[in-house]
Image 1 (cartoon, rainbow, N blue to C red):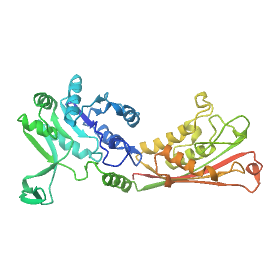
Image 2 (image 1 turned 180 degrees about the vertical axis):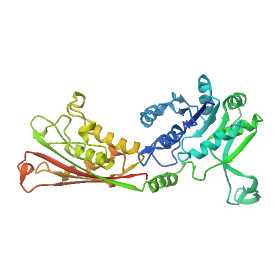
Image 3 (image 1 turned 180 degrees about the horizontal axis):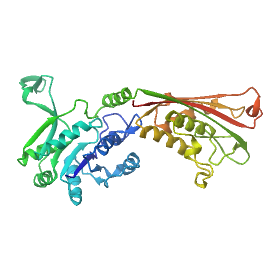
Image 4 (image 1 turned 60 degrees about the vertical axis):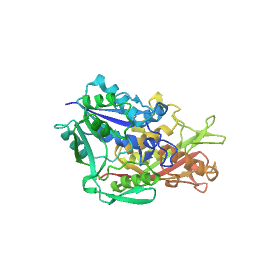
Length: 383
């Protein structure tokens, strides 16, 4: 049986206090949407994943899903119901047997939950994952309590709400003018029997700033394998080149000699991150013999190392750089370097250290022949 996950990511929710729609906010090295997609992509029972997005978010979506083999994205509607409907109509050409409709802002669903939904579909056309209510529920009129709801017959709905594809498509077509809050409500209108499967208390929907904070903490708690890497690099001065250090262009009479932009600080940082992963060094990933790296911004090298950390399921804890030279002075540019490195790595600025020192006129650096840099990086990986 062919099963497709339809992920709804067209919303504009900003209640998290973030500048981006919540599905594109980074939590510990991956966007919320990417974390959600990855769970479905890695489940053996899911054949394809399709995402419904806001057309204005195309660039954010493409950046978030880079390197993934997904079905083409679908432009959503003004409301969630319309977005799901458009997604279902698009899937007709792929003839799925099952469709699992999931909110992008629920990145903590488990493989076990997906399996329960798929097993439920073997005997029923509609499956709702739901959790039991543990608190006593009260009815309100204004601020006055008017009654008590029987929690024994009440559950809290989650996603993925899962369906026989032809049945839910027919329900959307028949009741497209009915305003509902979820797809199970349409199944009810269509007279479909809905089977409840046990939900997952950790399958929470990220809505507020507090939810986002808790999501980051939840991921960090799972990453208990700490790795430390060290990087060191040296470049000689060269006339007629711009000087780039720590991702920042520095006014100076000389630049550094190198195949790329020769940013010695970012090269050391790249090696530190790769070392923490046990993934070789910068020359392995970006051979200086290859013409395509000539003049390349060293941002590219650091981004690559950071992406490898994320692909390993890890996060960057902190990085610390020491730049060794007589000139230029590092102090006036320290804050700009910290900001740029934090931006490249998608980490908080307070997790980036940048220091400058000299060799007291000793050695090649003391003679003003070039600049050296050393870096240390800490990453956290799953056990």
